[in-house]
Length: 148
Image (tube, rainbow, N blue to C red; front, side):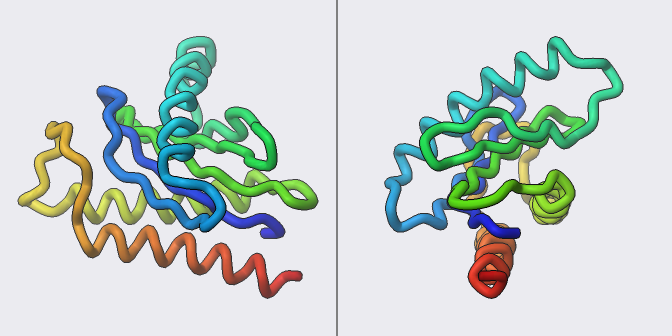
């Protein structure tokens, strides 16, 4: 992947923020909260207008400035948003699908915990989940620097 992940956000089925990890040093967390919040509208619009046998991967939601926002929605309507810096080249859908599948796997590990309340609107504060998301971002971003 020739671009780097700046943020990974999880949004609950009632459009409540579940988790946000900022990998960028240049933009504050507030900017990514705004991006995640605005992506909800695009995701809902795409799901409403799309076919009913919807693929979980929603693709590029929108681009702004030097950032591209990609979306993914689980069968339980939990939304994943990845914000990628677009410095050069294009991002392949296969690469983004792989990243989202890793995020989905980490999320499944989190919700399979018998002490996690799936219907709660609280944010995810699990250290294991945070480590898994950090590993996904770090592995993707180190491949970026190695490719150059």
